[in-house]
Amino acid sequence: MTKRYSIDEVADMLDRDASAIRKALRELQDQKELSAETFLFANGVWRITPTDVPKIQNRLSVLADASANSSHERKIRKRILKSPD
Image 1 (cartoon, rainbow, N blue to C red):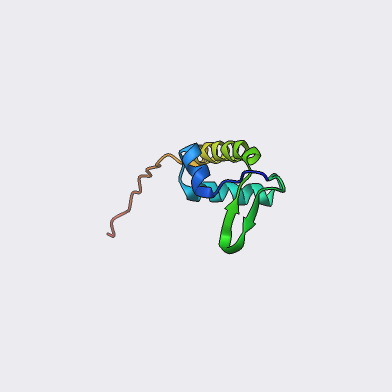
Image 2 (cartoon, rainbow, N blue to C red):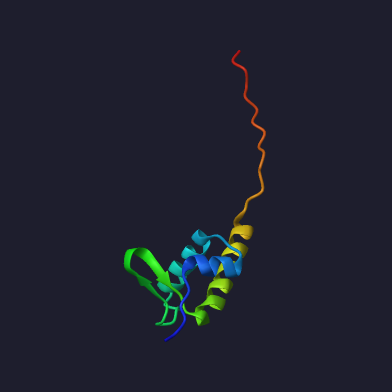
C-alpha cells in the first residue's frame, strides 16, 4: 500500500498554508500532471502520493514567481482641472 499524505501534512512539509497547496493541486489536476495515486476523496479531502510532493513544490514556486511578476508599481497621474471662469 502506498503512503499518502493529506493537504495539512504536505503544507507542514513545504512550510506553506493549506490553501496554497489546494490551489496547486487544482492546477496540477486541471493540467493532468498528477499521478493516478493522488486523488480527491470524499468531501474534498485530497490523498497525495509522495511522488507528487515535488510537483506541488514546483507549482508553488511557479505561482509565487507569477504573483511577483504581476505586481504592479503604483502609478501616480497628475490631473489638472481647469477652473470654471
